[in-house]
Each structure stands twice: as structure tokens, then as C-alpha cells.
Length: 319
Length: 307
Image 1 (tube, rainbow over the protein chains, first blue to last red):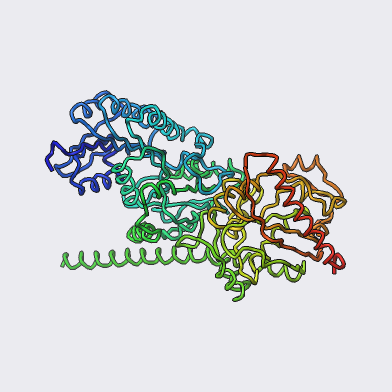
Image 2: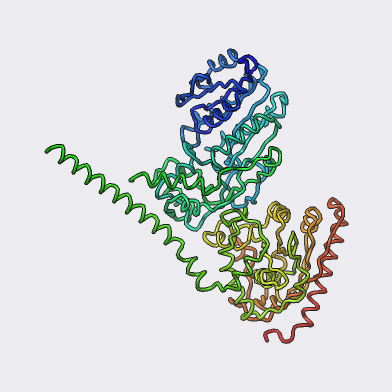
């Protein structure tokens, strides 16, 4: 296809493992001109992909929109929970995303996919199972550290409703696992001795990064604006998942909660911060039927495939 | 000479590293296996082939690794059922009638009277459903909301089929073709004193609405005998408030071995406008009538209270 006729897609967070898989999947379609933007790691692609290393909360970011007449934006770039200070996270994740929405409006982008997270629902003892998309987002009750994730959600919903021409879809995936994934659960399962709370083993859902990339591409190619939970149809308690990934669960006393928080702080494990403790105590199980029915989505990777990778990785390391 | 020496050294270091690696891997595997020891021993000691067969026969949608979205796990359910079956048969000497009325598959709402301070009636109805000779079902029970904060207990309860009482859980479970036991009287029923025995308390309209909404039949149940397990004179309310629990009964501290009779009625299929409060109240009254009839039937069937 002629380069001029190709649709132009901006993928943010291009340095991340998920974005790279999305880009590779889009590249194989040969219908798109892909522009990658990452603000942290520099990423390496072949010369068919234009790649910028730029902070999208900064002014210079507009240049990307001006230079390429973008058709769509896949917004995956995010500072992960424990990665930076809350204020910096807020700046990039919320203010930066607002900038992306504003620029998309200004330059006539026709389709936006926003990646959110299941964390926005909050982990609470009263949570029912199979939470659907209309469930209130209670993560801020857990901790102010999660406020940026919730605000990004509300901001995206506002733009989705106020500017239908943007065709915004918001995806809320469950725990993402797989090679290169740096989120809390993935890093924890990569450990040989994994902290957990004594007597608590909440049911969790896991999705392979490649399946999520496929889901993002599906949502991008057939825009049906809305909010969607993206999950695989299998469930596993946390402690069982640790064992399947070849790790040993190391229990922390659950009572009183202040003591467990103290212990977690003392352990100083970056991917196991005290404000995420409730997610390893109470279940947050999502209902993915809306996305499954809208896009005929089915996860290809089974939980055994996913955990075998972690098991193999562990056995390769000495310590 | 130096080269050979270095080679030997490198080989030795390499071999020791790989030995350490293998030993560490082995140790980890052993540790993981040891954490599974208690449930495995319990299964071997308690679970008979008959129980295994019953659990296998239950129509149940579970994931590839044996769990469903609410945490049900057949292996643990087998242990739970083995313990309950012994209590059901030998301690309370339960007699169940009308088991053929329980749908063999698909969603259903089992609505019963509630009594006896502790949810013993719930566990006995569950056992009757799970051991039904006409087709065993994996029963789901709705439990109090403070349970998820209790370590070990909640994990075990969810694995045997319990879940916190929430309308979303209830609707999604029925949509998933589950059978749910509900006591619409709640603590009004279980916490009532002995002088109010076998008198149905107020029931909300929520269960009728959900049954109509999910097109699930209601199976009315009358339990007789649980009132006598822990007869209470009343509740020490100030202590209950202090402990943040619904009631503290003035009663014997251990359930008495009263004989229990459970009568299952014919399934009721309801239709109607769920927004019409008066219509819903009438339907609740109809279900209450059925339960009352089954209680009276049970009282006649029962001989002496403890024999």
C-alpha cells in the first residue's frame, strides 16, 4: 500500500513490552504507519517505525501531532505505580493524558484507545465477584497512591462522552503477565520467595501480554467506543499462582493491618508496596463478557503457559 | 600448565554453581510441596470414594485449574462435604424429603426459614443438596459481610462454595446456572429467641425480584429441628454492640443434637413486574405460605425433639 494512504497510528509508551507487541502486530498488518513515543526507555525498532523519545506532558509533544497527520492514538504510556513519586506520576499519567486528548481533538484524531487497569476498582472486602464496567471505581479508598489511575479513568470517560468524534475506548485489563512486563504482580512472581498475607489467597485473573496486545489491536481496528474489562476466562488464587510460577509463598502476619504494613515497609520490596497490600488480600475479579462478546475475544495463552515462563526464568537464575 | 589449571578451576566453579542451583531448585520444590501437605492428608483421611463421585457428578462450570470466579474448588469441597456428611448423618440425624423437587441443573433459588443462632440450617441444606440421590448439586451460600476479613476461614469457605451476600454475586451466580441457598429472614430469623420458634419473621422482596429477573425457580424449604439446636432466651445487646456482631444469645455454648427434618417443596416459577412493590410483597407472602406449610409438615413428621 502506498505510504500516503496508510493510516497513521501513534503508540505511546513505545519502550514498554506491551507497546512493542502492539506495534509488531500492527506492523504485520502492513496497513498502518506507526509512530512510537516513549518517555523513559529508548526503544529500538526497524526503520519502518518512526520513534520519538519525548515526555508527553511537555510542550514539544505537539510537534508529533503537527508533523504526522495522525488518524488514531493508542495510549499505553504510563508511569507504573511504584515507579516514581505520586506527583510526577500524576503529571505524566493525568496531565499528560489530558494533553493527548486535547491534541487529538485539535488535530482531528478519529480513534483513541486508552489502557487503564483493574486497580481502579479497588480491593475491598465487600467486593462482589465478576465486577462489570459500571461498578464504582473505589481505588482511591485504598490509597491516594492510586488516585492518578482513577483520575485518568474519569478524564478518559469525560472525553469519551463529551467528544464522541474521538471514538474513545477504555480497556481495563486484569493482571498482565509475560516477558518484559514490569508491573507489581509480574515482578513478584519473578521472585523465588514471594510475600503474601497469611491465610489470604484472593482469586486473581491473569492475562498474557500477547493476548492483551491482540485485544488492543482488536479494539483499535473495530472501534466500538466504551469501557471494557479485558480478562481471560480462568481464575486462580494468589498463593496457588505463586506455586505454579515455581515460587515459595512467604506469609506475612495479616493482623493487625498496621503491623503487616510495617513489615511490608521494612521488607522494602519495591513491587510490594504497602498501599497495594489489599490487592493481595481481597479479590478483584472482573467480568469480561462485554469485551468478549463485542470483539469475539478469547485469550490464547493458558495459565500454565504463562506460569511456565516464570518457572523457567527462576530456574535459570542462581540467586 | 596455567591454562590447564584455569580450565580445571573454571570447570569446578561451573559444576559447583550448577549443583547449588539444582539444590536450591529442589529445595524450593520441596517447600512448595510441603505447603500442600495438610489438605492432601485431610483428603486422604476424610474423603471417601462416594463423596468424590458425588462432587464429580455436580454440574459445575470451572476454569482449567479447578477454580471458578467465586473461588469454588472441588478438592476442598470434597473435604467440606465429608465433614458435613458425618454431622448430617450422625449428629443431627437429618431426614430430607422432597429432594426430587430440586432442579438437576440450571439456576435455582433455595429459600428457607432461618433459625438456631448459628447457620447450621444452611450447612445441613447444603449437605442435602450435595448428596441428593436424584442428582447432586454444588450449593452456594451467601454469608455475612465480615467474613472476608477473617484469614483462612474465608479462603476455606469460598472454596467450598460460600460467598459474601451481595446482590451482584447472587445475580451473576444465577446467570451462571448455580443453585443458591438464601435465608431472606437473615439475622431476624437466626437470632430470634426460642419462644418465637417456627414463626417466620419479616422477609424482604429482594430475592423475589432477583428470581424473576434471572428467571430462576424458587425451591421453598422448611427446616424443623434447628430451633432446638441452640435454644436462646434472648440477646445481650450491649455486649453484641461492643463486639460489633449482630447478637449474643443467652444459650448453651454448643449445639444440641436435635433431630432435623428438611422438607423441600415444589419449585415455584414467578413472573411479574419487579418495580411493583405491592405485587412483590404478595409474591413474598406466597413463598412464606409455602415455607410455613413445609414447616408444619415437618413438625408433624418429627417424633420427639432429640430422638
